[in-house]
Amino acid sequence: MYIGLHPVRAGRKDRLARFRSARAAPPGPGRRQPPRFAVVLLLVVVSLARCGTSDSASGTVAALTAPGLRPTAPAGELMDISGSRIAISDFRGRPVILNFWASWCVPCRHEIPSLASVHRKLSPRGLVVLAVSVDEDRSALDRYLRDDRPPFRILADPGRSVASRYGVSGIPVSFLLDSEGRVAERIDGDVDWTDPVVLGAIGVLLAESGNGRRPG
Image 1 (cartoon, one colour):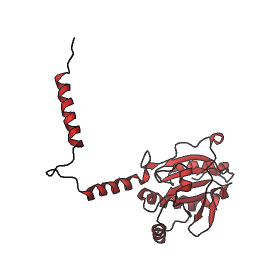
Image 2 (cartoon, helix red, strand yellow; image 1 turned 90 degrees about the horizontal axis):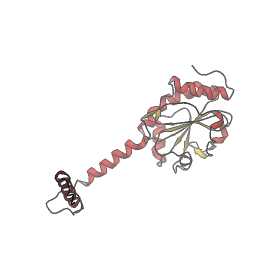
Image 3 (tube, one colour; image 1 turned 45 degrees about the vertical axis):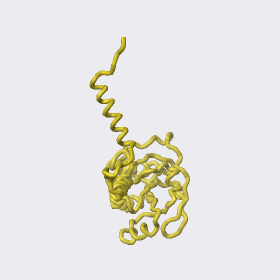
Image 4 (tube, helix red, strand yellow; image 1 turned 135 degrees about the vertical axis):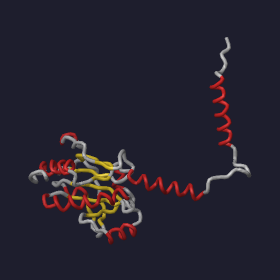
């Protein structure tokens, strides 16, 4: 028995074939192409929107990894903006917020005030904040810092050598490192560092390092 195509399905198949043929055909003299500047503009908008390519626009701490399961943080050595060479391992014995950002990234700039706040509050108790800029244009970074200089240390990673070791693609991304130099948590997206949940997680790391009570 011969079973032909259902008339509706056959019609859909014909329309699909015509659509593919039309897409494959070069534009004729009467057909307009989209303006090139519109395509460029679209690419710029997508690029800016993807500076924080993470699962959500903002991040928080779900739960710290148990100490025995925490992986050792990748090694990294970078220059800070004053020209001093800094190794992440230099801060072994103290918990570290390792934040990857860029001056052109709006979500990154959005979290800087709260990051500065937690630095001022908890650095006396041993917390270290390292903000690793992935700006390729050093002059752009310098201009931004002239107008708004954070109180914590800024490191430069223009080639993303350290960022790549941490698996960073979109930014901002932050890592909470314990005093043994292990990764306790990764946070994708901009963070409100004054959020009680986030402060509680940092307090756990401070307590593990022997630096007193949890922050309130």
